[in-house]
Image 1: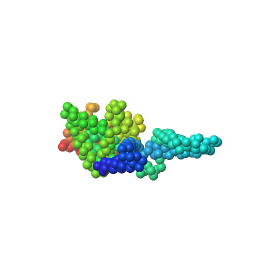
Image 2 (image 1 turned 135 degrees about the vertical axis):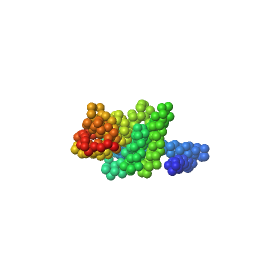
Image 3 (image 1 turned 90 degrees about the vertical axis):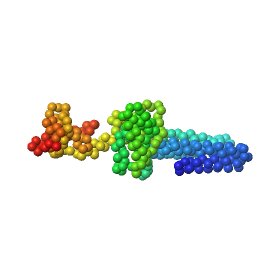
Length: 338
């Protein structure tokens, strides 16, 4: 609400100043032209502010640097032309208009080229350190919102600042919540509830962005384009999106990888007690699970089904789906029924 009043004050002030300036030169009917001109300037300023807000810090810094260099080039070019024989007279050459034209041309070229090359410009560290937190966006994927673990991560305080939710992600959540399939409808509604819960988390701000890419099809492609445009990171647990984004140089924060990294480290030779709940694929194997969901393959454990059995770890296999622990029964005499 405060931003709205600031924008309203800007529009009113520009319109009033434009009207007062025009009133000094024209009568009442024509002075209204100054009011509309001031209003137009205020609207241009607001649209420019909205556009610049979406740019990353290196792009802004590069554009400002390029425009300043362009104006300096225009100034020295005009200064050099004044020393050419026969061009000293003000009557022969309209220097103010020529300087305005050159300043406009070189300033525009510097702005465009500087913004294009902004990512290649080495911004001083003290500037980056101040703007890195605000410039680096963390963009939420639909799957990670529905998953629910992101809300718990925010509650622990491991992630702070602003999390960006694109409008097209919200639309996908709404579409899932309105699905005729009861399972999809339940998942979509849970995602919306989790998003509302995250908005109430201390230290977290949920930002809804309307930036869209109509020419791109699919939410994943739009997420990659949005992250590339703003230099942000995508938070997801979608394996395919993870790989596609990495191929295009986008940084990914994968919740599944975080969960695997937080699982306790198990080394070969360690002993543990597990409960075999089913038979494995190979003859004689038993399958058990740790509290964090890690699968434990017990060699010759099929005869201890529904029992607590003490096992010794033989090897650990890390896969994209998670961690698997291979073990053997330690001592059958120490095993007991539940």
